[in-house]
Length: 427
Image 1 (cartoon, rainbow, N blue to C red):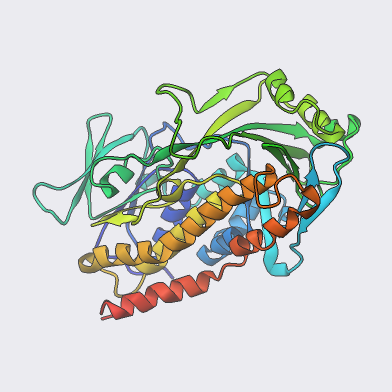
Image 2: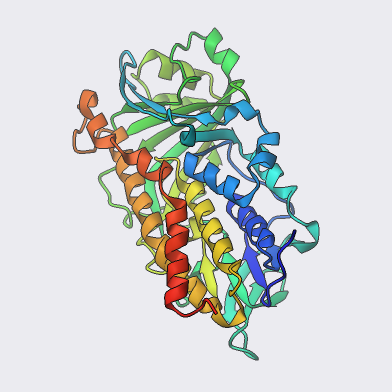
């Protein structure tokens, strides 16, 4: 039985994974939503997406996990640990992140398949394509309304704006009072590619990545490797980082592409001298892998909302991907927003309070994961407390994944609802 419609309208800007999950969650909570996407159709750039146990619990809580699993092999939902290997030399395992509890089930799948599952749950009548948001402003006729302006010259007036428009968010500028200075180069590039597992095995690849995804660690570089599509395809992400310049300094020159196709030779040169399985992986990469210059939100936002406008996902807390936690944090944002806006007493008169509560609960959690993701990358690359003492870097990694995976989402929701009560919004 559907819930009664609310007396306010929400506009979600951005139709990627985070935006679509938010739309589905809000609609199921009885909130009227319109979705505005810059592209001509739904689509995700990138290959595989890894969803940790916390993200899986969000999908289950929203009621969409079963539909998502129909777009992949259900066997892909399983406890997923991580084995950390030396990248140079014999690839010995030096630390394992255990995921044996049934609650530790994660999911690895192709981004396109995940997106397709979400799209099938969205009413096409609420979706507006070719709507690149260029500006957000208060309505001149009603300060309690918000105007979205788009590149094609059109506008849309609404009660609430939620920006799920990624690291280059146009909505974030409104949150910051008109000037957005929070995009920073993470001094990290990632080479990405998909390889048939049979090809790797035929080439002599030895490391077991079916039981647990692998991280090959080495000086200022590391690779993440995990299977997709019932172990038929292997997703490879090879990171190269610089640590002599702090994040926030030394940004890329204007006009530098963030994603580009490069030669396989470039990746192989970066990892020259590494161990045999890494050499095989890179030899089997596509001829033109994609190279991503990873950007983050830095310095962090103190608030994710301003009035009746808020941001979520990468627009709020874009982070380095070293704990595989970015998508999951966006999903946690969406779940809390849907619970708050779906509260029986949520109405047009308390929208600003709701967004303040959302920010108050989510900002500390997401920023903690931002900082731990940065720290994890340093450890993988021999720049953590134990440097390149690979036999002991596990001491630096202990508990990092658990802090992401086993976070109590219900406690966050309870904390938000307690704030709802404190503010007298429950009547």
